[in-house]
Length: 514
Image 1 (cartoon, rainbow, N blue to C red):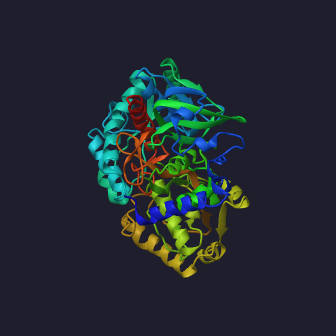
Image 2: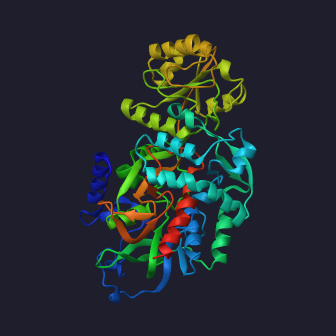
Image 3: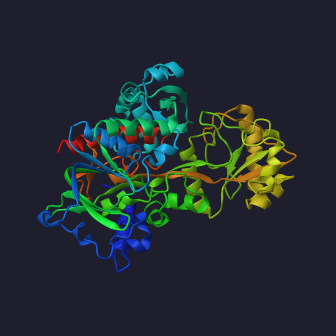
């Protein structure tokens, strides 16, 4: 059962979406108006009599969305030998996966042992890490299924798809989960583009048909509430496609839909006000909207995959010498922690204080600064990215923070935390450098946006669940349009791709087995 606040968000969204004549189109939902004049849109979501629908074509399994999760879903479905049709609204497949590094988390693999010092890591330890970061909001069965399935995904990449794991990378810690920390990020040669090429090649070898420039706008249900097909737009033409078995939603999230984000994911809405989203522009919440139209439940759609722009903090367990401060001039988070953990804290702090948060450092830190050196920082100042001042008091005035608070914070950092090498306030483990002038610097931290976390509620078989927790017949979902396997913040780079592949393959196999 969702938390009361999320139920309220969902009810408010539905009320705003369906009340009155403006409906979903007025909200900008999914970039699609629900109906096209002269089309047969009345068939959608109304308990249609299948015998009265004029189907344009049919397939055993229909997959909506051609990113990493969608292509993996087609592979899983087509393994069973039936016909599989992928419908993608863009001109080509790939989605955000094609734009990504293609990195994938897994524990206990031969590559982890080859590239890292973590020789005894296990899927169980990985599970404990994700559950801790989920802060009690994850579906334990989903997380366990994912973490124990990740090593098989890496094996599948290499042995079945011919990919090469040529490197490894780590991620930053989260103080309360350090006992379960390990470096687990497998980096394939060729990055996300290589993954998409391999997925597409495998799908086509297995007979999958891919139709691009086809925007699915609605799910079609019968009188029993089972999903039996989809309505889609191809240019100005509306078509209806029948699914003989199952339908899989793999449309990612509300990344570029500010109106849906305002209703469903306040942190993502905040991020969109500050910076640009880096995911595929076709990620506009289509699948989440379509699921909601027929009663699908939502879970944990209130976090985001946000990092921090400009500062070039590392993805390991160290940062250069800087601190993050709020309006009071005080620290509020562990600066060398995982990026999404930090931006979650920044979001809440900025909402509480109605004021931006800043990174602060001094001229003494430029030697180890990864973003700028003594010469290039002048360019950042002239561009307005960095603010400089000849004293902490002047800097505080320029960024609008309490000067007494900022001075006390820097004194505590310089005189207590740095000499001891122990951050008794927030659990930082690296970057213990004194912050000294004569020049001081600040950066208004902006989120690097990769989309929200959470979405359609699924069970461990990837079936989409309604608000009563019951499976919606014939409907499955995979990838970043789903929730339950992450909590309020994204738990680490490579998690999304692992979920795309693992749950995508499973959704496809289960949809084809109906």
